[in-house]
Structures are given as structure tokens and as C-alpha cells.
Image 1 (cartoon, rainbow, N blue to C red):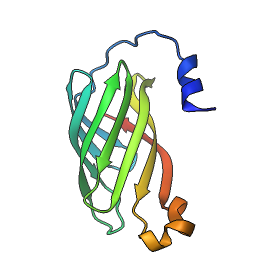
Image 2 (cartoon, one colour; image 1 turned 180 degrees about the vertical axis):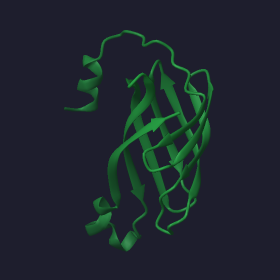
Image 3 (cartoon, rainbow, N blue to C red; image 1 turned 90 degrees about the vertical axis):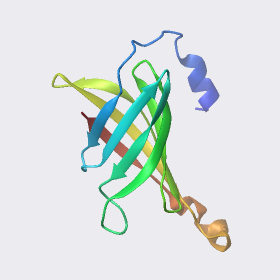
Length: 128
């Protein structure tokens, strides 16, 4: 299904506003500090997992719409990760359930055969 067809199927119902401000942590111990201004997000993301084996921080920016969220992190390495998700209740706790994709740079000479090997995907669950 194309993005346009999926968007056409969504109902024009505004979701209840959710307060995303504050510190959130995922299942791997990565931490993000979110600051909301209207429907815009800003903050810092500190990944507990990196290729070097130590934590790495990146600038975070994104958007919210009711209890929907999307944000991207521009890493100091040659990579960008984007998450999209929604707040759910799990055992009475607020959890941001997300899907993510990361694109890492591939040297130009390797792009014809290796471009799509640089795209990684997964899921994260963030709790306060």
C-alpha cells in the first residue's frame, strides 16, 4: 500500500493531547529528553548501544499529534535514525511503542551494490 492510500484511509479524528515532555528510556537503557513546543519536539537522545561499545548522543527533533509521535536523531557519526509510534497503556504505565529505521552512509563507490545494506529497522518501547 502506498503512503498516500494509507493516509486516505485515516479518519479525521483528533487524538487526545498527550504530554511527551520529560525523560524516556527504552528497553536497552537508551535515554531521551523531550521538550515539546506546540506540536514540535526537541531534545537529546543518548544511545546506550553503539559500534564503539560506549554511549553516543545525538540531537533529536520531531513532531507530535495527539498521542502520536515521530522523531529523528542526527548522530555525530554518518547515520540518522527515525522513529514513529504511539503512546499505549501497558500495566497502567504510559509506553511509547515505536518502529525505527536507521540509514548509515555508504561510500559512493559501494552504493550500486550496497546501498540497501545500510538501512536497519527495528522496534523500541520507551517508558518514563
